[in-house]
Image (cartoon, rainbow, N blue to C red; front, side):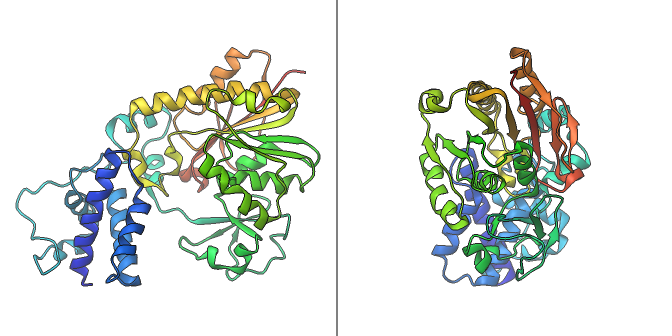
Length: 393
């Protein structure tokens, strides 16, 4: 493909991404994967270049753009060499017309930028949300140790017990160490959220929103496969991915529990009031993960945020019923909005006055309300809020 043809292909894909965001359809990654699979004429260099153009344009736009072409013209303002490729050539984009619309820039749609600013995320903090993320991995302590494991690329040690940082795009999933369960892809912030649980061998630990089990596997390693580890979620498809991952990692998960939304305690009744620790990695807006999913900021609206905050309150209440007296509840969101983080923890403590905050001794993060907040700007991790709460004896 010619450089101009790559730009035209990226514009078409951006149109699909925009339409899908408005309709709450498939994410950009899936749209690109489907197009690449169907477009055999695009070689590996073409696919790489088109992907860079699409995600570069997504990052360059704040509000959802009116069209893929307007989004690409916005990217061209930062990368002027692209302007020469709007040449009207065969398979290339038409020449630029005078006064042609260009998408707006910024970190997010205006209403969401205002919410972030009210939560202390603006300026350079907001800009860092759209930078490219590195690739972090966790060495699986059930099978190996970071300091003695030989990998195709050494990586930079992270301030976590078993973490390493690699360049974005490192083909970790092609390594023997990945196939053999010696390493897992996991952001440093996510690793620290697992450290905050303080899971120990012999304990009963519940991962209440386990999803596909990334944090569950880290908890199993922290427990050295000793104790009772329960993974629960309402999403059957995501939870089904845990079993093969656990087998590869050599992780023992005592139970996987499919939850019925609104009736979670019924499915978890045998552990009610008996868990040493419950991790609530709550569904959230994902504002802390825009480095990896930049078009997610086009999918969020006020109604969705209200539904998420209501669900977070509900899950905190469910978790509080599962924790034993003297046990702990660890609340985590990958959001930087206070209404999903510090505000939720404060509201929980206000409605459960006997509970108290436990200090977190993590190597990264800054105090935010009753917990800590990690941000891409200050900590070079995904954005997280983490609070550790203790139930009265």
